[in-house]
Amino acid sequence: MFESIQAMPADPILGLIADFIRDQNPSKIDLGVGVYKDESGQTPIMGAVKKAEAVCYQVEQTKAYIGPAGVPEFNEGIRALIFGGQHPALKSNRISTVLTPGGCGALRVGAEFLRRCSDEITVWVSDPTWANHMPLLGSAGLKLVQYPYYDRDKARLRFDEMLSALEKAGPGDVVLLHGCCHNPCGADLSEQQWRALTDLAEKKGFLPFIDLAYQGFGRGLDEDAYGPRLMAERLPELMVASSCSKNFGLYRERVGSLSVMGTDTSVGEAAVTHINSVVRGNYSMPPSHGGAIVATILEDADLRQSWVGELDTMRDRLNGLRELLATKLSAASGQDFGFISQQYGMFSFLGVSPEQVRELREKYGIYMVESSRINVAGVRRDNVDYLADAMAAVLRG
Ligand SMILES: Cc1ncc(COP(=O)(O)O)c(C=O)c1O
Image (cartoon, rainbow, N blue to C red; front, side):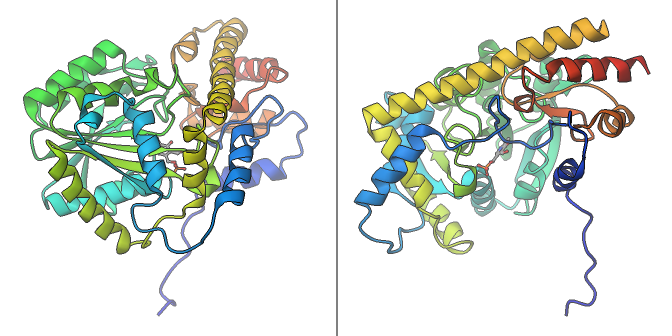
């Protein structure tokens, strides 16, 4: 059976990690891997998470199966975090939420649910988008097409072109949107642009599916949810995939959620019966540990406050690094890197060629993926000058 299979080429990110570990350069910098890092280069467990874990350890009475929708308190808490506790769609019970194994689980389960709604669905994804969107949605049998989103040469959004492309989307179509902190480009829609897009969705009747993987990493917990909240107020239907990997630092616990909003309570409830059946046919039910941690934090006023404080610190660090990096890169190279300070989240493109990316790696030990997407959190105040000087040297050629 297995004789015919050939080993697949190494995953580019995993290959990069292995090369980085082997590299003996004492000044090496990892800008490739997509996890948040603090000033010492670590990805520590958040204090609120540690405390919530201790609480869970004390109160947990059973390890019996939890059911396909996961931890009910998590589902309620995360839904309020995404949409805001007082959201009209939430108050009228139009949104149903289930716990999923990470944002990836939410995207995949959401994709299979969409397949059950129709065989003919086309999903519009941004050009560029997170590489994993393609297998997560495509392997569920959905057809993918791209809409223009970001101009790498001019380092700016292609919003007008995006709107014109989506003029062609209609009621059978799904438009995948990044809620905030776009991965890979960091360029987010302004509130005005979200409003224009919502007008278009209303006019054309396409279904927005919002991937909210970085809530709290851009402008703030509420600000980063502006798009989903607005769309949930104005549109009849919506789907949101969220992740707790970054904002709770729970990467390996695999915690995320899928929310489906329908025109009334019965639609959301019917959707959940299908989602539960998709889950049963995949992994049967999600792990509960991470969901219990998040629920404990969101339900306890003190833990919640300390989590929000830690999240604020991470966001401030990222935004501070963006300012610093933009200033240092512009000063060292004589080129304008100001766009980095106007973008949000962990990722931005430096806008250099694959050859220059290779030169940065081979000559200076600076690691990033071939597209020149960098994880801003990989920069530190004590290595930003080294990075800026290396970039300037590579740009001079
Ligand atoms: C855009 C985007 N969506 C979803 C995810 C899902 O992450 P996870 O499955 O770890 O929650 C990520 C993680 O990097 C992401 O960047």
